[in-house]
Image 1: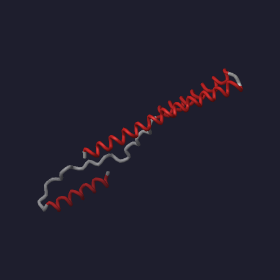
Image 2: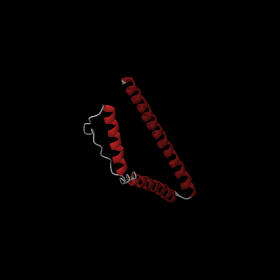
Image 3: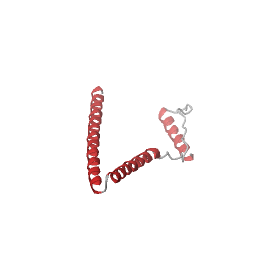
Image 4: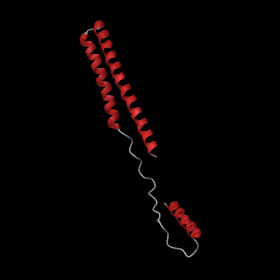
Length: 115
């Protein structure tokens, strides 16, 4: 069991390391793409236009991410069926244990159908 736990921890650490490395590489790529876009737009349209376009793009992407984060997860649906409360142990019966177990199951099934 301990080896399974170690294996799971190692897998999780490896996955986390690869995700962090990938995120760093993506950020570096985004920086280069931003500089490239800046150079192109500033040569063609001017520095003010380039700053406006890049700033608006980042602001818009940021708004989308904040909106997605604010939306969160969908709320859980209201309980359409209330939980079934089954007695943990039925009252003692006079018959053998197998008959007692059968009657207990029948009682639980009947209560589940009524709920």
